[in-house]
Every structure is written in structure tokens, then in C-alpha cells.
Image (cartoon, rainbow, N blue to C red; front, side, top):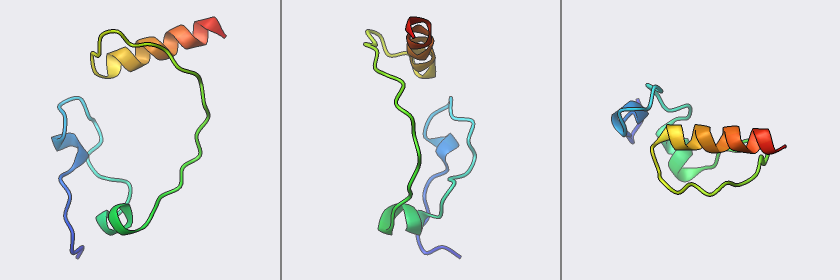
Length: 65
């Protein structure tokens, strides 16, 4: 049984489909998690509309490649 409890990610926002954290709370707080990522670029977002804004910006960057 974990000694630390975190609110599930789907309780943070209504648009989050993830039900559980990928890592245990102790690892997230006291250790580290390494992820590999690729840089796609940057795009100015004038109006933040949740994930829709991110998806629109990514689509614009893909077109400009």
C-alpha cells in the first residue's frame, strides 16, 4: 500500500481520459522518470482552448514542414 496518495489524473480536468498515473506517487515525488521526446517546433497559441489548441498548433506545424 503506497504511503502517499495522489488524486487520479481524470479528476484534475474533465477532458483527461487517463484514469491512473503511470508511476507510483513515491517515484513521482522522491525520484525521477525519464522520457524520450522529439522536438517538433513551437507555435504561438493566441487563445487557449484545452487540447484543441494544442492539436491545432501541431497540425499547423506539420503543414509547414
